[in-house]
Length: 220
Image: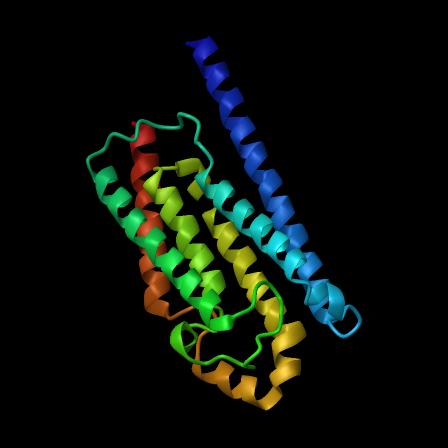
């Protein structure tokens, strides 16, 4: 039993260290993007470079999804009948996030921190949230965690939410408010930054129930 426990700890800590590495990359991206948004006028070729934006978006998304979706260690016996329910909901949330993200990308006709060719967008998903891309990433991250019953990955989910919220605040603080001024201020008063309270009640209600149920199983 002692050997099994030591092996369990080794696998668990390795999994956590990998996830922490992804979080460090995400925080670095937050600082990096904030710098270039703040200095958009100084570095227009870098900010508007499509290839660099594609690379940045790919790395950012990969880190978010791997942080919660990485293959978990055998943290607990996920055999409770309710786990099927969470997997179904995870699939729904995941597909909703993918749909929201791709619909927004088509609407923006730009990627990363590139300027949208048609100015400030206030239609489609932008009527529900000022940052549908980040909300989509949050949906996909939660969906992956639930679908794979990844308890230790989902323990990092609140940090993923905070990082995406920070990215959204960066965009507004260093870019959108300066470019669109009164138009954006008016838009900001009408539309929430990352969706309505009902959406967040559902997200954290589902998340909290899953974590509490699994930790209860683990204790037994």
